Image 1: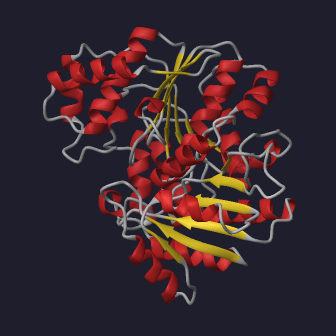
Image 2 (image 1 turned 30 degrees about the vertical axis):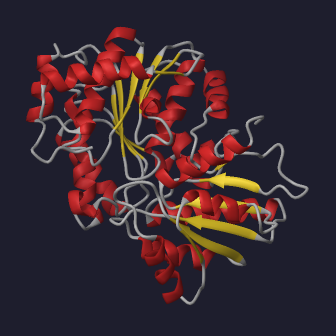
Length: 401
């Protein structure tokens, strides 16, 4: 996440810790949507190729330790006690550090201990002023989809946000761009040219990747797969075609159109799907994927549970859900998070669009409703935090899964 006092405090913190990140070989990934999936696909391919990978992502779904992992065939999250110890070291070195600065510094300390071959580093927010932008010379700078999100911090136009994302581009470091938007692409291309960087346009080679088997569903995941492979190639890392195929097939990120019970649903048990889509672009991609899924599984009675943060464009998200998902029952739910919007307010937006919905005071209430309506599919979306809460409730209720 960006520190809008600049990066001075983060750089000071890292200096006090002995610059644990100095020798990392980094694939640095920014973007509004798709960066988490791209990061996981990148790590999965590298792991399949025999490398040890440090993976840093955000936000977490259920447990903060998800943010910091080592992939060496085991996908090990950092232990909570160890994470707490490293965070305390970071806070002691810089008492005024933000939460995300502490997370990032702790991750750097952990990776310095574990010595992975490569580190796949996802930005938290923006790029130019993000705490991860303290890596002086990554192997490659990757920018996925760019859309309107975090507008209070990054700017209220797509072009201002794109310029913030372009801030991760470093002198002479290859740039991999996923966006099909010509104007946004030109911002990245121009910045790359000014800094003497090779520019790889994924949208020009996207169709070559349609034949790959992916565990993550949706047309947008093909773009993310193409971006991951092009990033590895641009970084100069040699991996076999087999490692690419198996790595992409195995790559999996909880909370991204995650079907929790695909092998056991049916005969009265609805498919239970969680997706952390939390902005209009992500919601649009989600509706396409969900429509395709319900057609494939011939599910005609479906429930959508929606919860969102106050600072998100939830009105547009609701309009997209209502416009693209026909025949669904809708419910709003409270999210156990400080910035969460009141479910009553979300219900008013649904009513303003001409649709009634069930208003739930908690994720637990929404979960109970999902079990009562003889639904074919249940989709939870609007917030990664709501997705995490419902995921925990579902898995607790189905401990054999």
